[in-house]
Image 1 (cartoon, rainbow over the protein chains, first blue to last red):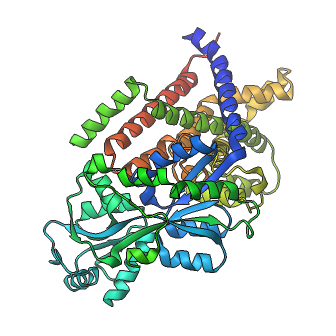
Image 2: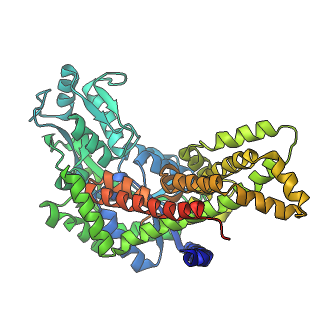
Image 3: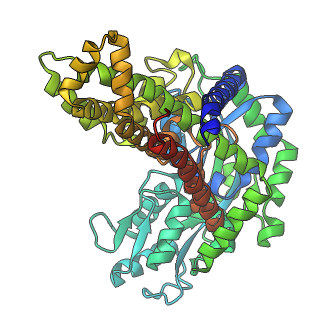
Length: 288
Length: 232
């Protein structure tokens, strides 16, 4: 063992050398960096794990995917800390564009939001006509509702639905905010047997693996559409952003080939696609 | 319970089959946290020894600050390091945010006060006359310091272990300054958080088991060095 110990400094030196060498090759790759700020749903559903490698191979850019809520993603865009956004919070996006932080906002795809709840359905909302009716019933029954509470696209949609139902949930005992991503919030709702709003993609992907025990209560309402846009951060505002890369990514997302991949993603595994491609369509045609 | 068993099985499968992605994540964790610990050892040991062996006004305040730093929350470090490294922040021109280097910086900031605080404590714990005795035997100042460090090596190694344990297990700073970028800044802890969010509990457990094995292996080596008989 003593002999082993005498060689220990050699191992440490070797480790240091290889560690420094591999970290500095990381520096060399810095030239063509692209920071993509996106929502947790695109990452948690696994879609980006499929698309990003194809994009990197095609263009030679190195994509740093930072998956946060749509709200935080747009904040990063406002500060010039991201190059391109893939987000799903249409009202906030419109404000973002109007304030001049973004350029070339393009429709990419949609899926839909669903209201989920535990099988015993304490608020009796199964089959409710609209999400607003369901929310009113949940408020009346004081049934547990779990909110993302993180300014994500899903959270923004949820706020809109509560407003439409005329319910102010702030400070109510039955209304709890997780402050976590979609996947984690679904896990919390499953454990606590609460109701929540989720995007169908993340729900399908997660339910397959984790058997959440949550059932779809309300779906199919035009108001529940979940629409994803790609936005380039305005290079006129932030000269340091990589606009060439951002444009390449936006073009990639709406290209015919990518749209085909999106239309089939998850079909085999989950029985139905998780996202529906919409490139080139007018938002009005989706019922917005 | 099934899920834990599945996770353990998965962990051994991943290790046995040398899954490339998992190995890459594990190697990056070891590399980043190992380097951060080494840097913190260099800074913490030298500054800590200097502070312990000298006396100056305000020493108590300084030591209190260092001791407070031993409990520095990783998310706080992550937040401040991110703000510094933002493109449009003071160090933005370095383009270091969302790189492994950024994680090393943040983890060094977390581990340095731990090593420094333990160093100060260990050095001050040595008998005061030891210094005089070593010097009286004709040692130079540098030789004296080296002998003191050797004398205090038990608590010093404990400090290194605490520093390494602190940084390899932290997730807040790594995710904020690293961004959990696949194949680039994804370390064991951030990958575990992500896989949990995705509902891949078996994968999350597998990563946790690997993390634990790592901590054990590294601490075993350090403990061995700490406990070995002095060479004769």
